[in-house]
Image 1: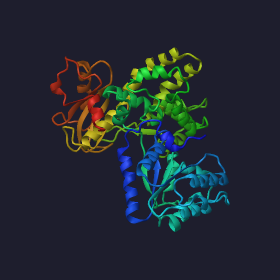
Image 2: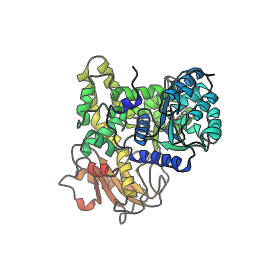
Image 3: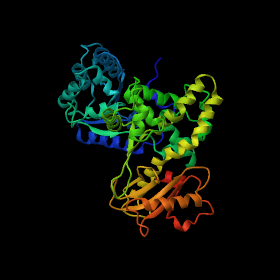
Image 4: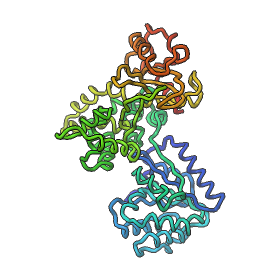
Length: 491
């Protein structure tokens, strides 16, 4: 017997998502107050918890609802038949016998059946993996638009369209598509570091590690034993090659990039540590040589702007700078490409000890680089909240020159990448050893080289896992940013 979504939703406690639940509740109240329909398109990467969030919302809302999930590769006839079956078996229809059991296999008829089944009081209709319906039937979006305009928008229904294909979900409501202007857009990101720590019962330092390993993805956190730090968890999972810590990024990679084409080679080059355009081109090339700029540049733009699988960082200062640096946006996929894929291969060969040795050997260096975007984001949030000793900070990045000598980890400015004012420069040292006088000497040499640095006005920031050493003159440091403050930024 197949488990229902309500049964599955009880399998693990629901953590976080207060903001998103409030946004959905606000739209349901709008439906109740106006008596008319509202549509929301919710997009987010696989395993980020879209279905779980919406199921939780439906359970809490206590209104009739339909939760339909499309099946990839199903024919239009099969998809419509599944939709009508789910509609008939849901709490939504006033009379289930009035829902047709067969039908013509087209979406206009299915949406007419839905409209006829809607109750007179507020209800919710969920269509999960909507891009698969568009993919298998070119007429789906037009049928949805017509049904919405003529039948559904006049009824008290909240329509939620979910999808993991970020580009397709963006296109669903773009200006040249039938459903343009008819739905609000909600981008669902992973759980933040504070929510990750709360879900797992970890102190701030361990919560940061857990967030880096899991990417904040509920699909991984559900398999994470309570109060277990990252390395013991990874050691335990190295005995299970099918563990979510391996399978979630692996399935995401295969779903987005099923063929070993240029895009896949570029992604793996970045995941392997190549950050500049030139290095990526060399690694992603072939025996004929480096990947040509005319091919690589559009690919990088697509991976950043459409797929959202890469992020690009530019040096922040009062002058334009180069080069731009690329990184894997999701830290779990980044860990998989850099470390866990090799460990998984050992695990598949029945060598869990060797698998964990791979993880332990690469962990410190990987974490030291991977935590930098998280530190920058936390400082930006604190600046917005007024928790920093500088006013007007709206962007936090880093700075480097073409030689990467020096490379300054933290630069706080009024805007990015070309700033009007630099408020602080800083260093990130996320190690078990504290920030010492040698680290401070390196920072005081490097920071003044950032264009816009003013020794009389620009402050110094130290982000450190282990605080500062006794030999550091803390009077020269304006702010020490540790795990506690990093996590607090998201509370």
